[in-house]
Every structure is written in structure tokens, then in C-alpha cells.
Amino acid sequence: MSRAEFAGKRFAVIGLGVSGVAMCEAAVAVGAIPVAFDEKPSDVQRVMEAADRLQAKGIEVVTGWHGELEGDFDWVLVSPGLPPGHPVMSAWAGKIMGEIEFAYRIAEAPILAITGTNGKSTTTVMLYKCLQDHGAVLCGNIAGSGYPEHVLTESALTTPADGVLVAEISSAQLETVIDWCPRVATITNITEDHQDRYRSFEKYKTAKLNMFRNMGEGQVIVLNLDEESLDLEWAGSVGFIGFCPDGGSGENAQTRRTDDALWFSGEEVKFVDLPFIGEMNFANAMTAWEMACAYVGEPTMGMLRRLLEFRPLENRMEPLGARDGVQVVNNSMCTNPMAVVKSCESLPQKLHILMGGNTKEGDYSSLQKYLHIAGHKVYLYGDDSGYLNSLLGGGYPEYSDLRSAFVYAVSVAEFGEVVMLAPGCASSGPYANFKERGSAFKQIAKEWLEDEEIRKS
Image (tube, rainbow, N blue to C red; front, side, top):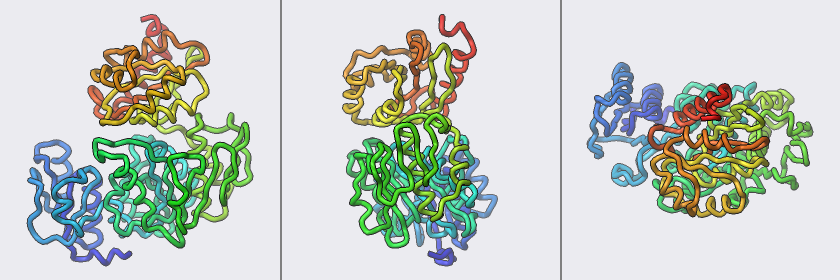
């Protein structure tokens, strides 16, 4: 691929979110002529700010767009937020290019890509840490991690060839793959999610598998051999590394596990010395190390030192502290049923789980079965708690808000137990997103951790 292929081409860029703005600016940088479109009116604050930014650079902006394109465009660049059934997708079939495809075509640095239903953000940051001394740039769909995050297209434009783009990739970004081909890639797992977008698990899975579609000689796929939702046949004839977080033998693996330690290319690190908790994070760390080794060839102790500098991401299995032997964990990014299961299975303690929000039309039957067997305490909160209760089989206590659920949970939790926010749902009122929800929970937890009175209230 060469940036020269876009010189003089006319682009319609759909969406004025961060991805759309970055694509417009990158398009100008490679000699293309973009026109930006957004269906929201110009008086929406976000749209107004984006339009002002682009128009200041001489880029034409159309707000209040009616959904149809008129004129002659060589490519229609679509943001991940555009629904797959939007009329422009069919009307301009053959000329649709998504964000990751455009970024791939203009990138000079190689791309290492991570997708999956759960664990992808943590794995992406762990890989970024491993390669921090190799020019790594953390980019893609990752958000709210507490680490330096960048838009993929912007990173593709500005990162030199001797750097490396470490990118979290969503299923929405993968829907429009044409020639996209990362140097090293993984899928952490594929379980049901985003059924409000895909309507069927197979469509969601198909989008995820586009990650590997064009990979061949010279690229490497890394897969967790113990993850039941993955299939080794996906690797085909591509370079392949398989590893076993449960302690078995892998294929070309640089990691292994014993009863009380992880081994990274021959170096032992005891569980107690790892800067993260939970079985799921052991698998994430092994994935990141295998991907890093696949990229650099010969691992260095600097890579391991950087990995051990890792600190838990905000809102992802984030320990907030303990009081009277009761630990509090913020897992606000846990937005689907299987994420609750995976998170709970990662911790050996008895759990008090706070759940609530928008179910996204998901299937909660597996979570219902797990909770029935596991014996954890569950506290449902928010306006939709009654509906969520019905999906989980009923019988769980309901609270009007997150604070009320937390106060009761910590009042009954005993020494050695964990109170964890693991909503299992997308955010809903009063929280606009998982970051707002996590911030609110951290404030509530902080009050309890520091103030004796909240436990008595």
C-alpha cells in the first residue's frame, strides 16, 4: 500500500466523531479531498467543535445530513459508529472504506492488533508496555484506560516505520475490511455481545474473524489454546503461536504456567509479584508476551521489566482498596453477560456483584446458570433492575441506584470477600458511558474506604 494511491481522490467521510475528524485530517495530509458529513445538526456541541476544527483547515463540512450522498466520490470513509444497515452502505457498495482499512493503507509502521469480546483493552495495554522501548504507540478503539491513547488513523499517519502501532480493534471497525492485514494479531475470545447491532451471534463472529481474513506468509496469529470460544483452524497456513494459561503445553509458545507462577521466555514471575489480579489477566499477559515475542523475535528483559510496570486499567478489574478485609474492585467496563462470568472466575474469593444497566438485548441464560451454581451474592441497581432480574431467573435484591446497592453489599460482606462492580450491561441513566459509571463507583467506594459512617448508613 502507498499513500500516493489517495492523491487527488475525493472522499466522503461519514461521522464527525474522533475517528471521522482524524480521517478527514489524514486524508488532506495524503493529498485527498475530503468532505465531512454528519446527520446531527450544527448546534450540537460535539458537531460544532468538530466542524469548526475541520473548516479552519479548509475542509468542507455538511451537518444535518439526510443520509444520502450526491456527487462524485472515489471512496466513502465510514466511522465505526455508522450502523451496518445504513443506506449509504448499500448505495455505495464497492466504494466503502472503514477506519482501520484507511489507517492500514497509509501506515508506515507495522500494526499489531487485538480484538475480542472481553480482555482486549487490558491485553492491548500489556502489549504496549512490552514494546514501549520499541517505539510502541497505543491506539485504536481503546478508551478510558488511563494510558496515553491515540486515534488509529492519526497514529498511522504520524508514526515512523521503525515504530509499531499497538491497536485495539472493535467488531464494528472490522466490518469493512478490504485489504487490512496486521503483522501480528489475536482474538482473546468471542462470546455473545452487541446483539443490538448484529441481531445474531454468527454475524458478530464473522465481523471479528475479519481480523485474520488477509493474513498469510509473514504474519503471525496468536491464540489461547484453552479458550473454548476460539478455533485453531482460523490460523490456517499463517504463522501460529498457541499458548496454554491453564498449564498445558503450547505450540511455539514463549510462555507457560506453573502452580504459583508465570514464565516469560524462561523467566519466572510468582503470582504474588505480578502487578495484576485474576486468572483472566494471567491469560491477557501471556497473550501480550507471545505477540511481543512474535514481533521482536528475540525477547529482552527490558520487555519483561516494562510488563511488570503495568498497572490495572481504569474500570477493568481495578482494585480500589480494602477495609476490614473486604476488597473493592471496579470493573465498570464489564458490559456483557460473559464478561461477568470471566471476571468472577478470575477471582477465588466469594463475591458480592453489583449489576445493572442496558442489557443490549443480550442472552443472559449462561450468566443465570453460572450465578446459580457459583453462590455469589448479586445486587441489581437502576431503573431496569426488574427486567435484568427476570433475565437472571429472579430472586435477586433490587436497589434504586448504584450507591444503595453498594452500601448494602459492604454492610453484609465479610473478611476475605470482594465487592465488585461488574454491571454485565452497557451504561444507562444517570451514566452516559462506562467511564462515568466507573468514576461514580470509585467516588462511592472512596467514601466507604475512608469514612466509617457509610457502612453504618
